[in-house]
Amino acid sequence: MSRQRQKNRELLGALCAAGFEFVVVGGVAAVLHGSARLTVDLDVAAPFTAVNLERLFDTIRPHRPVHATRSDLSVLDEPIERLTGFRLLLIDTALGRLDVLREVTTIGEWADLDTIEMEMGSPRSPCPLQAPGSCACLRAAAPHERRDT
Image (cartoon, rainbow, N blue to C red; front, side, top):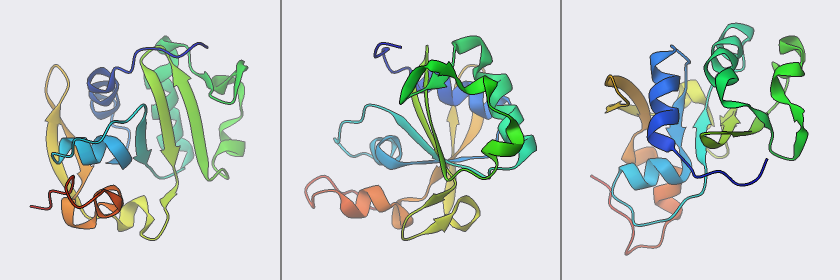
């Protein structure tokens, strides 16, 4: 799949509305906290349970998901039981790139992350976002880009 325009607001709204358990991390979390940093994908940390991955796939199915590293392979063709053992999923969709991580290095699994909620999508749904004080991407940002509140 060629690089699609990244539609993070639409992608986040769909994930939140579907009941997919996740926390926004990475560049998008930094931007939502006020960083001027650019990002080209949406990174989320999530539990890799069969139920949660099924919710994810039900949500992204209409958006033609493929493996980001092998665009000739649909993510949907993989058995869920196999995917529950993965550390991350790199997915290209018609809404843009989505990286799903089992854990965030130096912090831990998704359940270990400090979070806040932010309203996203249309209709507005609460969306979990990594809290600024624990945001690895903000700690890694240059001091002039950092905005811990």
